[in-house]
Image 1 (cartoon, each protein chain N blue to C red):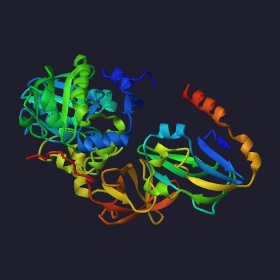
Image 2 (tube, each protein chain N blue to C red):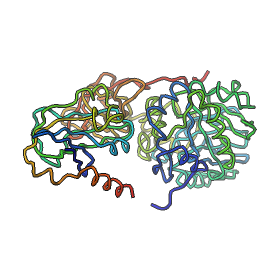
Image 3 (cartoon, rainbow over the protein chains, first blue to last red):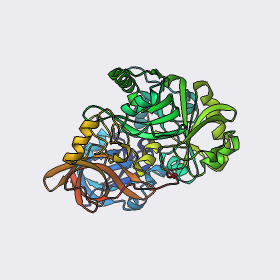
Image 4 (cartoon, rainbow over the protein chains, first blue to last red):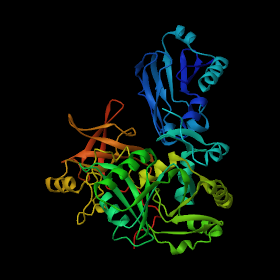
Length: 124
Length: 370
């Protein structure tokens, strides 16, 4: 199940583990990504909290926790190749995996259709 | 904010897929396809920039040279006709009203090329200074009649030669001539804001589109790209050129910014007394380069610490593609600006280790003055 947050993170849910990255829409808006500050493995996070950042040539952009839980793993390949987020934001450009603690929080996220509409409205 | 101003090339930018942003009251392309690609094109081949938002002020009359010498810190009286100087223009406190280029056209005419965001402020300032003494000059803000293209890169001359009736190899660095490029009347100067060799072409607004299209037409097979303000900022940052509003403001003096070379104390100029006093008392802060050692990228406005003490701020900071380093220009307090000094930048609430390094960060193909 793939969901999206209003802050433009995508969340791929498998069991109680969620893989998180920034959406293709978000990377297009940021432009060339030159640096990714990864979160710490093991860190407890709560929904809505700033956990790391993705930096384009021009500016830093926050990545927010889409769900509450704990960071399990980070995509260390982004250290050497942050541009992976530009080329493949919603697959190999994943940023971290987390174990989430409250499945009810998933209801607050959008599905692909809803997110598409949400982005169109932001454009307008 | 009122309506944004548009350059004569606005429709060209839209046609090329430019992402338009507000800059100094203008609607300008920050990038076309990719800032990194545009940066690379300029460093390795050439890129074409629309810099028509820049302002041009014409000064004419018998006291032109004396007035220009009084107005700016660098020396206009020692320039030859056909020569250009970069210079700060200071207020009575020595703060920088703007940084600009002075084109010495003749013994009775100069062209001031000023920053887009400062056009009105500068023109008013120049009008005021003209009243200080009985200068016999006429001033004309010709910004709206003038378009400017910057064609920058190590191959700029080779490529532009194909369509230039002006002999480009006869224009030394920081010199200009009037002539034709692709049959269009231009002022062609060997100047730029990228750290690469190249030219700035001043034309009447109606000529901007045909000249822009022609340069891209002949340049595209070589890999020339149109380049936006994002690439321009990155390129000038690596070369450590000042951006007004970041490195320079009304509150910062040229001595603090490391522009002493462009301040000629041996002549009279507006703001001289304040700068003499500052020179005698010594500087409290200076512009320096820093490299981020730990994680993160320093950005404009971030604070700098040594222990608990706030010792400065970042004026510009980016990841530099040419060096692969995360770098910043920063104002640092006395005692902390020596090369090698360890400082800490507050990046998103974390203190991140950095080190003072030498500038410029990168030297490109730009010619030096003989």
